[in-house]
Each structure stands twice: as structure tokens, then as C-alpha cells.
Amino acid sequence: MMADARHDMSIWPQGLVHMAEIIGPDEALKLADVFGGQRVYIPSRVTDGHPYLAVLTRDMLAKVCASWLAGGWFELPRGPMRDSKNKSIRALLQEGHAHRTIARALKVSERHVERIAGEMRQEARAAGPQQLSLLS
Image (cartoon, rainbow, N blue to C red):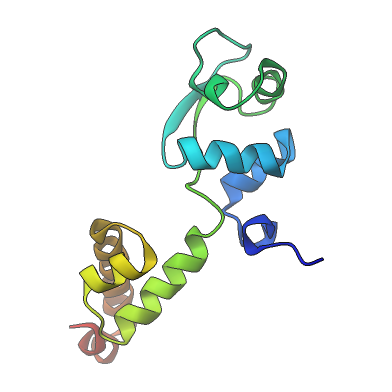
């Protein structure tokens, strides 16, 4: 039986892979679903009221607190498909689709599409005038 793309760690952002190495892929995905895109302080020991306790057991959170993440802020990526979606956004922008249309189709914010478009303009400027004319 073939695993779905959501469980294909080869397309996961590095931060999500790091978390999966500590607590396992299923628990990492649960965290990403709830806390993806948010910065959370990781204490060196489990504390009552830690936000991750809404998703993880105390034992799972203890693994995170005992890891190299302890004592710092950690921003968990939104999920495994972000890189894939960003590639799709770039392709649709190259085809000339409107930001709003892309955002709706891929279920992302218009602001995210605008951010990717801005990155593409910067990359085009760095590549030279011919590239820039394609994105203007």
C-alpha cells in the first residue's frame, strides 16, 4: 500500500522533519496542523500550560523538552505540503494567473501568493533584465 503524500517526509520542510525525528511523524503532523507557522518556546522540562500539551501527551512533550530544541524558540512549519504548494504558486504566477485565483485554488492566503511573487521579482532582478520583463 502506497503512503499518501502527507506522510512522504522527503517533501517535508526541515523543521517538521526535525520534530518527527524526536516524536514521530504522526505526532509531528498533529502539531503542524494546530501550531504550524507559530513560534513556541520549548522549555528544558515540561511545564503545565505549555501550548503543545493541547496536542501531545506529557511524555511526548518531555521528549521535545529533552531534545536539542530545549531552551529556545521553535517555529514549526505549517505542514509537509508547503514546498510543493510554493512550487505550484510559482508555476501559476509564471502562467500569468491572478493572485486571488491562485490563493483560492491552492487554499493559501493572497498575502502568501504576493510574498512568493515578490521573491520571484527579486530573483528575476538578480538574473537580469530579460527575466524581470517576464514577471512585470
